[in-house]
Image (cartoon, rainbow, N blue to C red; front, side, top):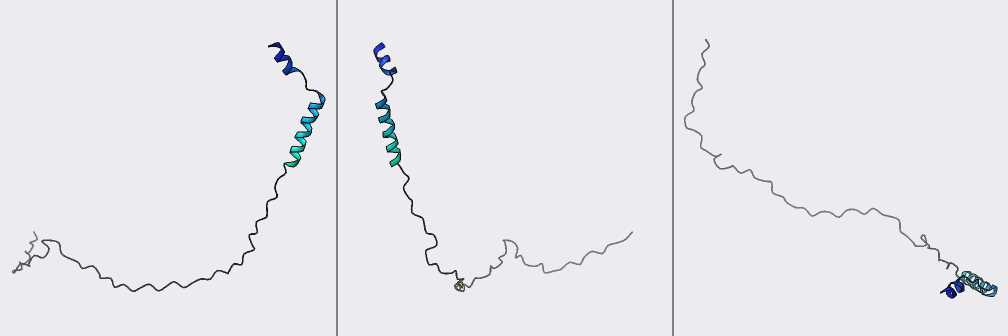
Length: 90
C-alpha cells in the first residue's frame, strides 16, 4: 500500500511535464472557431405591398322574423263593451 501512495505522490520527470504541456498547447492551437457565413437578409427582391380590393360578397336574402302569438293571446274581443262606472265624489 505504501508503494502505491509513494508512486502517486512522486513528481513527474521534467520531460513528461514538457510533453504534456506541449501536447495541450498544440491541441488548443488547432481548436479554433469555425467561420460562420454571414446571413444576407436584404439580398431578396421584394415587391412593395399593395392593397387589394375585397371581393364582392354574394347577396343573401334574409327573411325577417315573424311575430307569432303565444297560446291564449288571440282571444276574441267581448261583444258588449261595458261603460265605465261613474265615480261619485263625496
